Image (cartoon, rainbow, N blue to C red; front, side, top):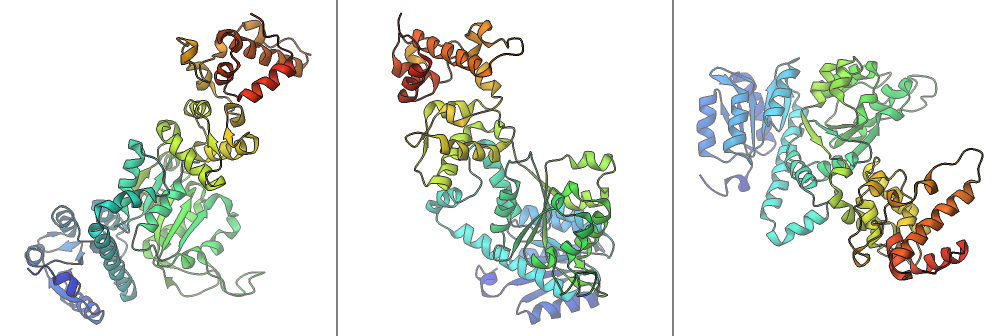
Length: 483
C-alpha cells in the first residue's frame, strides 16, 4: 500500500449490494476526479480496507452478509482517520441516527440525490484536509491554538469540553448543547463550526424563542413574492442562509409544536419548501441546537416532539456552570477586561477572592456584566470589592473562617456573622434607611480598625477598599480612631 496513495488522488470505497446503484455512485465520483473501489458485501469491503487508504467510505445499511452499522463501528475502531457515511432507505431516519451515534460522518437517503452526494463527498474531503493540517502542525504551535479558543479556562471541565469539540468537528452529526443560561452555548457552537470543514461557510444562530409563531415558517424557509400580504420580493430563510455551513437553533425547546413538525421534515429530508412555492429545494446544513431546559422532560410533558428530540440529540455536549469551575474565574476575568479595556483595568486580590466566593447564577454572562459595571466605578484602574456590587453573595459571607491573625487577613476575612446582631437586625418600620446603613458601615469600619490596631492600610485590606476610600469614609462617618 503506497503511503502517497491518498495524497495523489482521493480514493473512495463504495459498499452496496445493488449493482445499478454502485455503478451510478461510481460514475458520479469518477466525474468528480476521484478514484473509486466498489464492494458488494462486508467481506469484500474489509479486504479493500486492508489494501488501500480511503478518504471516504460510503456504505449501504443493508448488506447481504451483515449491516452497514458493523462497518461503521469497525472503521471507527481500526481506521480512525477515515470518515464513513451511510446510505439509508427512504423514511428510515432511525437508522441514520443510529449510524451517526455509532460514529458515521454523515448520511444520504435513497433515492440518492447526486447533488447531495457531491456535497457530502466534498465535506468529507475537506474534513480530511483539516485533520491533516492539525496532525502535521508542529507541537510547539499547540498552545497557540488552545489560547485562540473562545472557550476560556483550564479547569478539567473546560478541557473536556474542548476535547469533545475537537472530535465533533470531524463529524456532520447533529449536536445538542446543554447547559444553564449564560454558560457559553453559542460560543461552543461557533467553536464546533470554526473547527470543522464548514468553517469557510456561514454560521447562522437563531433564537427560537424570539420569533413570533406566525412568522416562523417564513423566517426558517423563506418565501416567494406575493405569498402573503407584504411579501414584495423573494426572500431566503435561515436554512438557505446557512447552506453549506451550520445552523444553530438556540433555545430550541421554545419551538411551537406546529413548527417542530416542519423542522423535523427539513432536517430528515434535507429539503425545504419556501412559503408560496410549489417545489422543494435541497439544503446542506449541519444542525446544532442548544437549550437550558431539560428536553427529555419537555418530551415527557408533551411540549416537545419525541421524534425531533431523537433527531437533534444525536450527540450531546454539556457545558458546566461557572460555579463548578471557579478556578477559571481569574482567567475569564482577565480575558473579559482585555476585551473591554485592553488590559487598562485590573482586579484586586480581594475583589478576585470575592468573585471566587460567588455562585454566579448567571454564569459567564453575569461575570461579564459584573466586570463591565465595575469598570465604571473603579478608582486608579483597579476594581475593588465594593465596585463589584455582588448581590446575594451568601457564599462570600458564610464561607468565611475566623482569621488566625491580622497579618494573614484578606478582604474576605471580616465575616458579618461576627458583628453584633442589634446592628444588623432590621428595626421596626418606619425607620431611616440611610441612617441604618451608615450605622452598619460605621460598625464594620470600627471593627476593622480595632482588629488591625488602627492601622488604616491593613483595615482597608480587610474591608476590600483602597486606603483613600477608607480615609474618606472615616471622615464622612466621623469615626474616632482611639483605642
